[in-house]
Amino acid sequence: MIMVHFAAFLFLAAPEFWGQFAAFLGLASLAAAGVIFMWAAVPYRHRLSSLWMLIVLLSTNTLYFGLLILNPRASWALVPAAILFGALPIAIALMTFREFRHPLRWVIVVLYSSLSAFLLVFQHRPGNGPDLALNAVFFTVFLGCAIHFWYAYRHATTGAFITIAGFFGWAGVFILAPSIAALFPNFHLEDEVWNLPKYVVAVGMILLLLEKQIEDNKYLALHDELTGLPNRRLFQDRLASALDRARRCGQQVALMLVDLNEFKRVNDTVGHHVGDQLLKQVGTLFTGRMRRSDTVARTGGDEFSIILEEPMTRADAVRVGKTLTKLLENPLEVSGHTLKVGATIGIAVFPDDAADAESLCIAADLRMYAGKTRPRDGVSEKPQPQPVFRPSPHPIRKARTNLQTAE
Image 1 (cartoon, rainbow, N blue to C red):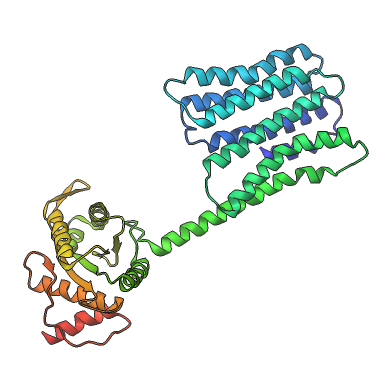
Image 2: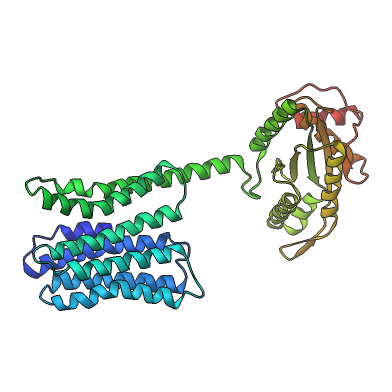
């Protein structure tokens, strides 16, 4: 709509009707851009009443510009058109009052009721009445855009600040420009100066897109794409932070490694798609059983890692582990299939079993692997005879190899 506005204004110098039509099209498209933006910014835009409000505002703006520019002799029609600006939004708000109430709906009602009153007072003023009316319409539209965006996009980012400031500046142009013209008639500013807020809003929108892309990339870098859980990178960072806090406070931290027992069979028999859905469901089950201070991460194909922070003891960790294994003992309904997978859990506690994150992971992994070879209740928390090992770039893989060699 902004592009239509600029394109139409290229033909303002056209003779007679075509010049007037270009002015009408340019102004109507500029106002429509603001109205559509307000509609797009509200969270309830798909409600029927919101669609009616959009149609009403687009229609009243277009009607008013048509009367003011294309048919200036029909000044009597401006009075009912001005009344419609306030009456129709009020009617829609009152008709839906019992079933729907939202602050932004009443922002529209207040803004356009105030515009209606202003137009009835000033639109027939000799000399500059039409100009005041046009400026009042655009001030209302872009002040509404600023308020709607401010309410709907509550992010303290540079892009949000620039966009909101640009909309307020855009609305302010329609007060500042006529005020300067009235008070300082010999002072002249180029039209490009008054167009600056449009570009400020555009820059803010571009920054918002870049910020959203950076935020999405950061999320994908730290979370598992399938389950949405923290991935190994974020898990290691949180484990290191948890151990640092435990050292300062003299507390314990438990690490649980959970491996699904029959996951390969699920993939082989019912397909990888069902296996993916199973992993998502298991991740949801585990997350629902943990406290907000704990971390559930997916650190391998069918392996989950859980950090249990203070207050936490070995007995608490064992109790949590048994709860999780019991969850997976019950059949799960996944994509029309009834699956029973079970799990083996290895538990290691800081500082009793290891003094650093890498050694803690190795200890938990060895106990989980020992639980698979000597299954009892699926939870292995007591130290098993373990070979001497040295940390390697792939500690878990190396530890499993060492254990197999020792056995």
